[in-house]
Image 1 (cartoon, helix red, strand yellow):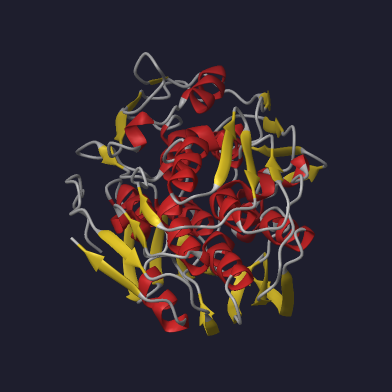
Image 2 (spheres, one colour):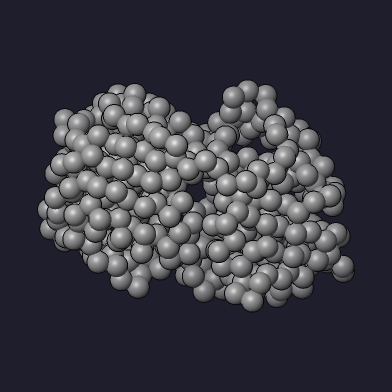
Length: 446
């Protein structure tokens, strides 16, 4: 695995997507990004050798792997999507010789900050231009409450300068002001090093991959309703772990098959963790034809094959309790809403304002550019049924914005030129090849 930091801007790639068509076939999507980040983190901090299969080889999760390599962890590719990781234990990390570069990996940066705040060395964590605009104040506050030394710029943005923990971290109880799995996980990871019990209360359920994976690595986590706690100073034990297919990636195929005519797609081996299935619940409320088949387990994660067929969707007021469970999938849901019968309203999604881009503003702008009646609100979107005309869409260097508008071309009356699609590989390597296999016609130019 290449350990060199990849700081240079990539060559700009635009994608022309032909209008209309159908998609059909049986495919698998890459491994879950959230689980891939965490698998590297926990295997690196475990005692013994762990084998990870189904690892997402996108740039985001690879940057997390490179970060731990820079701190002395042996991580080797043992197959196309398999890693062999020799853990160094909770206290075996070494001071990196350079800044830790996380590229565009916001999850990686926020999670690793909780671990670095507990180390007996100083470190600096930086990212690319996009990540350097993302606020980190929501992790800085609880880490400082735990006696961590962590600083950012005057607007709370990276790079993060993290000082030695000195006498160690203090266990706390933290009430999350906003539902965020990244902030929850950062606090719990820091809590692994604290004396006593660290706990977090969520205002609404968020993805629980951290809690599940800690248990896979032999660490006790107690969950009662929206209250999660663990006792620090324990031991993580190496294990073999299978990463399920990423439901966030599968969401693009689910919407594509739902809105395209005469389509029937099966996506094999997708993780259906109940804290991540908001996209399935919302699409079903809109009338989507979605069937879960061959339900089983991969480690501590539930998995299924998902079959989706064409359906006439209906606009809805998206239940606010489902929004945190579909936060990453909302951009492509906006595409589904554009061709649904009736108005769709999304509220409670202010988290989208601080993703890789301001996804509310970016999606509203893009939808309007292709003929959709879309109005951005402070915390969501109002979308009325429209004819998608095609045109040119700016992605703001956001991989999910790019994939969403590629999917929109299936219901467009004209071709779609999607700008700056090179970032798609951060979360969905092979996206273009897979969509072409299913029947789409796409041409990339640099």
